[in-house]
Image (cartoon, rainbow over all chains, first blue to last red):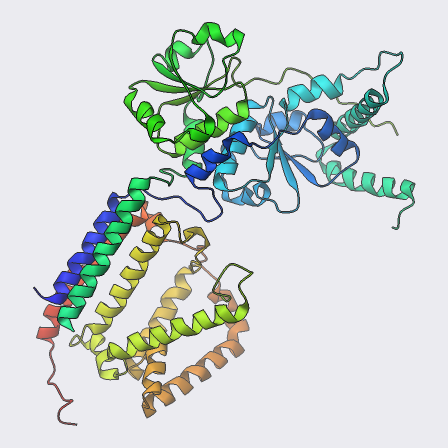
Length: 203
Length: 152
Length: 200
């Protein structure tokens, strides 16, 4: 047989085999299935409400909250500094930058933690490992922070610190969500500046 | 040159086919992308509650990643279950059991994170009719927020 | 597009060495296909020699199928491969200019280098003209910028535009290639010109 014809037939054969193969979706920084399943007993700890409240009260910028609810729910109220990426748009090409950060850790939350767990699992499967879930979601935040009350009487130092954190976070939450949208952007920045002045740091 | 090109071409082809067969046999690759798995969660309900169990999941094989809690035992006692260690999820025996079962696969774990990760992994490995059991399902926002004026 | 290798821990000289080796391979392949002869290259346009079509189309197919295979084996992340951004009108105008230059000069830029490497004087002039044209373009670019950046469609892939999977698109390309090669060989017989290499 003509060698050219034979080699063309080989190429056609190769192309046919490729069509019959399942489409492989391995990206270089993804874990392969067996490695992924091997890591299933060492999962990422969710972030507790008090820890998140402490980050918020200290205007700590090492975490970034991401709200995966619908925009209407986000506009109603959300954790200060959070950005809104509705769950259906999780794999939107424009948002990929937020979901794969190198400098911060993302804390993803919804009303409870079921959908956030699914979102974090999907992102982890894509290779974006720098995401955590807010334990209990916004319902737990409201239950623990917004309705935190001091009943009076003696409490331990730890409880005192927890209550103080929650109170500060609650104040921040209320002030932030009472602001019109245009002022929200400058709010956190001025707060950080004010606190720096109080601390006596360099300007 | 002509004879050599046929020989070289055939050799390359055979080597590639062998490599492809080995990779397919090992099966250590995803069948669908994470984005496609995300689409599945959008287009159909993945979370099954005791109320929706009959309509979504009438004939499930329960994949128990942890012990069944007491309140869930009522809903789940009547079904065929398989105790699985999450790290051995993709072992050949487990995969055979999943494929043999004709109904749905229902993942149960008291740790929601483990359940979600398992769902994503199995879904990306090509298993359809895959659900996660949760007694409440996705919940609404249970509180109301009052905006207050600023103090200054 | 340099460095060639993505891993930043690999030193730059290895990256450049890889680029050099790839270039050597490309020049070698061009020369052994006979593309230093402008007669062979222009033959594509006059119909008597379809070697350009066969070699370049086969190379593109091998690269396409090979990259799909490498992606299957997990050795290549296709998302990181650079895809040329597509500008619709500028592409057409550029194609017309390149086609004119190709048929008039008898070389395209890569084959011009391989011809210059074997000592052809006309290839040297051709390359000098190429450099001059590039410098001129850079000098008048501010006037052309608006047109040159119009019709931007992003890094477009044909299989995405058609809604086909890459593998299916590859199969269609291979079949189309086989059909085209068969037609080209028929055309070679129709437009054949007398062989003159023995007379020179």
